[in-house]
Structure formats: structure tokens, C-alpha cells
Image (tube, rainbow, N blue to C red; front, side, top):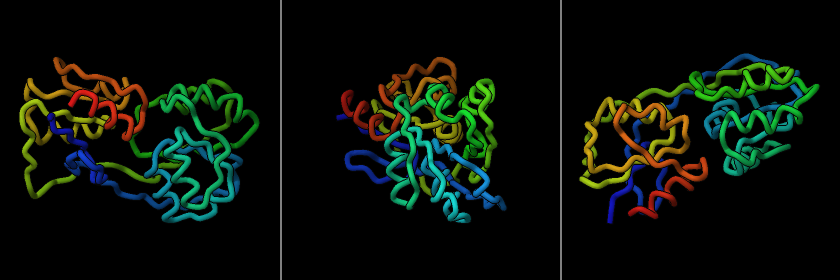
Length: 211
């Protein structure tokens, strides 16, 4: 049985955690009531915004996936639309007609890899961006041993960077990436399999099919 590793602190049965990412919220002074629509593409965008502004709950939210919708509604928000593709660029194309004539705010991390904002702007959507959190590599004070033939799940370019800062890749390892964009950040020569669906739970389910 191959061991499966995820690079965050989310506890999931049958999977080993290496919590490589540190999330820091970045409170902002903003009158969010000026907006007609909010875009969320990650759980941390929701949690970080909610930490300093509660008015977002009254504004219709557009969620990239069902998991994002679940967190929006658990935190008291209103979901207007849920994306079908779970990928930033494809999500933008799903939104372009829905957000016509709406003043829109995209809540995001300091670094993002999708072209969501540019795609929407190119389609005449009025959109602003609000950076509410940033990720950095967590300096672990212990070492997690990764045996041969393990499966490593990479859920973002940040997890790739942090992993290769600490570990040397073994040729017996199998990389599974949450999406094609993330896979492009792997070092040259490392092949990966792409999860059929862009959610961590689906990545894990996919990984288990190889274990």
C-alpha cells in the first residue's frame, strides 16, 4: 500500500499531512457594500475576509466549486452561483455573462495563477480585486519521512515551492496535481498525473486509486 501525503494540515483518514503552508490574513479597510457580487475561489479567501468584515454576507457570492459554496454558507453568506469546472480560467468564462452590469469584487490571495480577472475585464465586467491573505512556507521544526513509492499531492504552486525547498525528489515518488496549471510549476523532468476534478478531496480519491 503506497503512502499518500498532502502538504497542509487538513486531517483526512488514510492520508499523512506535511503542513508546509502558512496562511497570514491581511485585513483591509473597504466598504464592501458598494459591490453587487463577490467572487471566491478558495476557502482562505472566505475565512480571511470574514475575519475583518461581516458585511460580505449580505452580497451575492459566486463560488468556484461546491466546497467553496459550503464554506460560504457555513459562514452565513449567500451563494448566487457555483462553477462547474473548478478551474479559475474556465470559471471566468462561466461568469462573464452572469456578471454583466454588476460591480464585482474578487477576494484573493496575494499570489494567484489564474487569468480570471483579465478574462472578465476582456469581457467588459467591472471588477476590482481585494487581497486578503498570503501564503508562505512553514518552517517545520521536525522532519516527516517520505518512503519510496509514496504519492505526493500538490494542490497549488505554493505547495510545490515549499516541498522542493525541504525535500529531494525520489524517482519512485508519484506526483498528483490538482490541475494543469499547478503541474506546470513542477521541476523539469518530474511527471505528474492530473486530478480529474479540482478539489483536494477528489485529488485524494484519485490518489487512492493508485495506492
